Image (cartoon, rainbow, N blue to C red; front, side, top):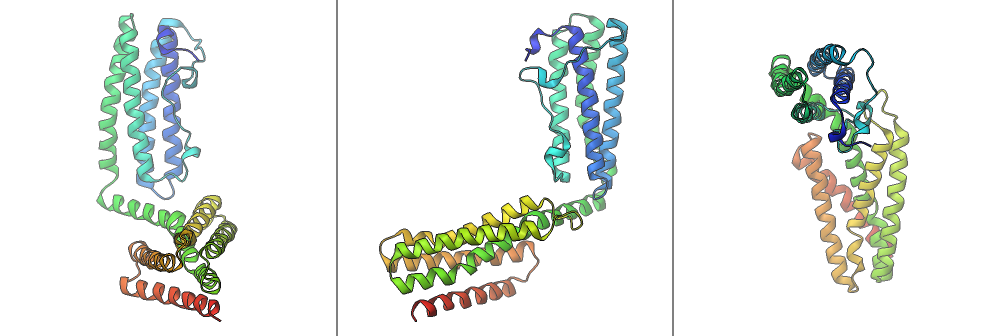
Length: 318
């Protein structure tokens, strides 16, 4: 890799041309990714891509005047400490908030690049263009805000935010909630059955951990294999499976960890307290994200937890 300070004016211009071309393609890729679900935001990124195309044209014109038609291959990744851009396919699923934040960071970084490049240039015309582009990037950021305001009215913003919320629910909240409910409830019976049957905290802990890990693995595969997300919009099955499996394991481990204590009654009291907290968290998530009335959510979760807990106690004392 080379240091930015070692580049000649010709190489700086070549690098700037490549940067503008790449930024324009990133904006176009974002527009294409957002076109179906967020058409208003997609239009914003198309206009930003056109702005980048104008900058590239100005740079090409000056380069040809100064250095001819051949442009050396100088890329971002060839320069030490230089700004890097992730391709759009690496930041999927691309939400509206992520896209807007990415756009703002791109403009700030481009301004810093042109400011540094203009300061190093000794040619008056090159220095002027680079300085103008630095100012243009500052104006570009304001232009982006203007485009957002002009193309994304209150109604469009609301609809896109609602679409983003639905996507978040489908991709993360639903599989996470399913896993947390399964881990917090289904592991109660074997854990407390083992606790009351043996009266030994270590045995109960081993049963709880094994039940939690087993349930986590099972739920991860069940969620991942249930839907590939291509038609439902639920996103990557691998991500959903990981979220579901992880939350299942966490839900089961929560009330298993107290049995690391040697005193049986203390461990039992803490485990029950943890179960109540877990059921409360599940009820809150269902009310907050799934539009379930709070009383109804609490009763449903508490009833299911109580039945499974009673099953474990009865089997353990039989």
